[in-house]
Length: 307
Image (cartoon, rainbow, N blue to C red; front, side, top):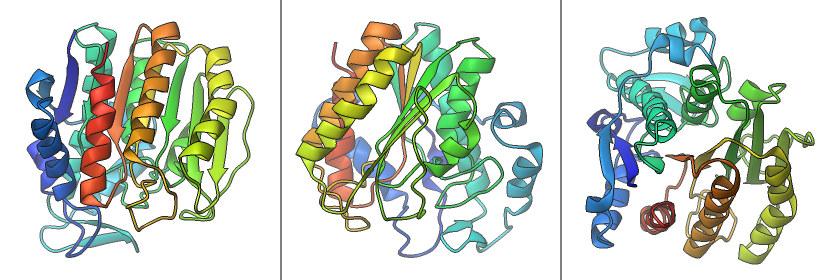
């Protein structure tokens, strides 16, 4: 059974200004790496639809959706926070990025594909219930997870977030919803400057100090994530796949390698095989050193494609 690769040309049109690290080339280098590894043609390619207001409103108030839409400029840039700006093409890209997760969820649950990767931008995991921030407008992974719960009737989903930054938005959205297990590793201290405590059976936060490398990352995930995942027995896994904890990425100070992303992907897929009928939807979050991003994302997708 194939693995879906979901993207849309609109996701390349979103811009936040010259020199901004969250740039369209991020999507291009991932596709180039998949071609170089002769993986691209073995993926099942889909264009991302727009997320509907109803789908977005499962995780964001309608007022937030309307606010983001109202800020879309006719020209130039509209700044929503110091790091997060909209150009005339941003709204379309954000709707497609969220919609990719809806489509991925539908395809995986229907058994049309085994797993899915959403090669989209803008990213989403900093977008809180009612706040766009940290390069993010709508919380893409949260939209997909809520779609699995509310539309498809699943009772337990897990979200694994290995981006170098805390997924504060995802935690804000699902805090108190015990149908969701959120496992997050992140550098601390680092943006967004939060280090919330864990909640057994619901939220597993594993902050990592600057300089943390492969051995400690793997030991932490194995010690803290794996027992919670086994006890929770998720019916589907979602991954916030940020690759900015790579040692080459100079926006942070963790020291992960490309092989660490292959390893954590294998761990996620093994959990999904035991509990979730192999259902995994992964979505691009961070990763700003282009060569490291390309290599790491390709390794991640390669392992999603493994039997």
